[in-house]
Length: 337
Picture 1 (cartoon, rainbow, N blue to C red):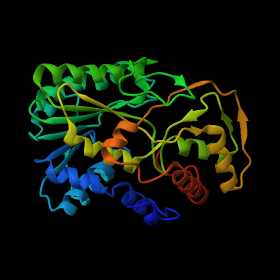
Picture 2: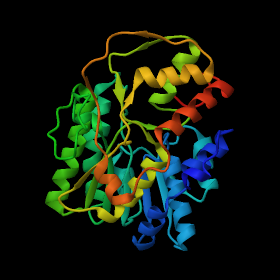
Picture 3: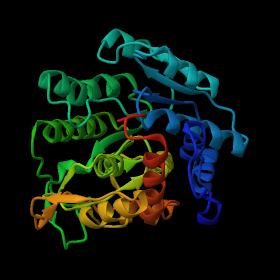
Picture 4: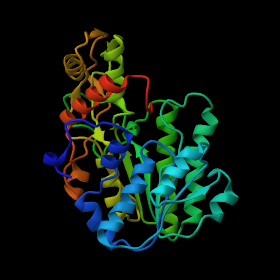
C-alpha cells in the first residue's frame, strides 16, 4: 500500500480493517525469515486483532505456513469469531491465571499486548498486576521464545515542545500510576531477558490512531459536538495503527538480550489548535478553545524504528482527512472509543 493507493475516504468497518491489516513489504520480508508459530497475548483489543490478521496476510503473501494464535478472555464472542474467520486460532482464558499461561502452546514468537491501558483509574492494584506481574508469568513460560512486548512513550515524561522528542536512550520520568506501572513492566522484561537470556524488544508506542479510536477521534468528536478544546497539552505525535502494527511485526527480527528499546511514533509534531481548526473546516463546524498551551508535551522521536523498517505509509494529513470524513458521515457516537 502506497500513498497513491490510499482511498480518499474509508466507508465502513470492513474497509477500515482491511487497510489496517495490510502488511508492508518490510513485514512480508521479515516474517519470511522468522521461523515458527506466533502468538499474540491479549489479542482481544483495538489494535491487536488487525495486527494478528496482518501477520496472517504477510505469511500468505510470502508463502509461509505457520499458526497465528491469539489468547484472551474474549468477553464478547463476536471478536473471537471475527479472528477465527481470518484464520487466527484463538485460546480463551485469563492471562493472570498462572495455570492458564502454563497451558499455552510453546511457540517461538510472542507478541505481548496484554495490560491495563491508560485511563484505567479504578482498581490500581489490577493495573499493577497486569502490567508488572503478568510479564513474569509470560517470561517464565516463554523463556525459549523471542518476545516483542508493548510499553508506552508515557514513561519518558514531558519534554519541551520545540525539542525533537524523547529518544530511546533518555532516562524515564513516568508521571502517575499508569506510567509507573508500565515502567515496571519494562523492568520485569529486562530482568528476565538478562537472567534467562530471552531475546526481547520493548515497543514504546505513542498514540496509534484509526477512525474509531485514538486522540484524533477524541478531538474530532469534540469539534463535531461543539465542545471546547483544551489546549493545555498543545502538541502530540500520532501514528497510523497499521503502520504501528507493521513496525511491531518487523521488530521480531531484531529481538535481543538485553532488550532492544524502540519508540514507535509518527514523524509529525501536531499542534492541537491547528488540527482542530482543520477538523472544523472539513466538517463545517465552529471550534472553541480553552486553556493556554504549555511549553512541554509528551512527544517521542520514532526515527530509529523508521530507519530500521521504513517510513509510515499513512501521513498525519491523511489521517486527519479520513477521521473528519468518518465522524461527519457515521457520527461521533458509533465505533470504538
